[in-house]
Length: 112
Image (cartoon, rainbow, N blue to C red):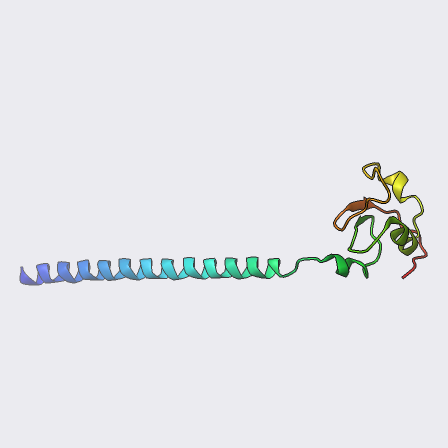
């Protein structure tokens, strides 16, 4: 019978060792997922758009006003003389600020 208890002890030790190894690998995988998630989020935050960068973008249907822009300069740049008519949320054409979202219907001839 000594061999039977010895084999049970070895079996129990093997199970404990396998259980520890399983928990170790689970912790490592979770850590890798966490690190990958943090890296992806930090890279996404670095891609912020600044108003000055938008000055050199082509005119899209949805346009974000950049710093120093006026409706007149946007109209000249995009070839859309009806910006105020297409954007009823603009109460005062002189009150345009960076970050304001406006609708543009660009012409085929753009001024850059």
